[in-house]
Image (cartoon, rainbow, N blue to C red; front, side, top):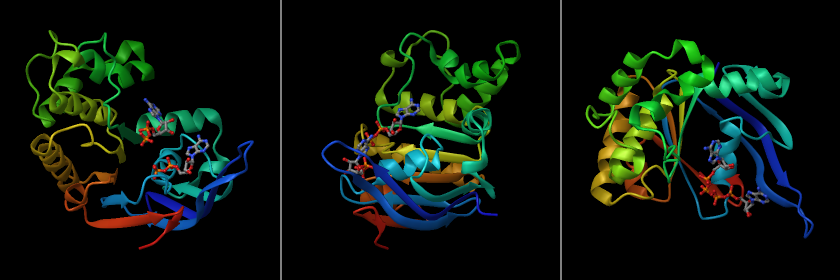
Length: 222
Ligand code: ADP
Ligand code: ADP
């Protein structure tokens, strides 16, 4: 089964001023190991799409399947476990915990799983994979550069060995050279087998991916 499958998905936000149809009958599949970019104008539905892929929100109509299992059929515990164990999230503004040091940030998802079974070596291994091997115990996120902060965020996203990496404008807050190094890192993760979906405005970012899904007005344009 595809890692992610959308079948005729519609997402409507009910507002007092009238309903907003953010996603308008979208169907597509993401196969294991794909590296996909999602592009489209502001307000076209990209974040809504990513939020539903990450099972952070559910469709108004239609169905989403993760490895063949319908999200609609999962209870809250199953959804929480799915998000924690199988999906890694990366954001434009990193969303790191400012009071925790680097290693504590990376370990955080392990702590949510089991306080007693935090494997610090695993965090070090993931930080090595993103080419960070110093400042781990001595620095908090705001004492690092933007590129280093995003590397910490990627290591944190990788800590539970997720099947899927969902990235919302991962280079949007970085200069172009640092952004390119983050995309090089994503490409390397992809070569090692990761399934990666990147929402971006930046054609240079889309260049790194295997295919681009273009969204216009909540529909797939190409
Ligand atoms: P994009 O990520 O492409 O900018 P979004 O998915 O954020 O697009 O938004 C798609 C549409 O849905 C827009 O019209 C936006 O205003 C609306 N929208 C997004 N999130 C919400 C929400 N939580 N409540 C109401 N409307 C929303
Ligand atoms: P935008 O692309 O419009 O800037 P964000 O990146 O802020 O949107 O958020 C995208 C979606 O992910 C939103 O629906 C938001 O609720 C959700 N989200 C943002 N931060 C987190 C987080 N730390 N954990 C879980 N969900 C989040």
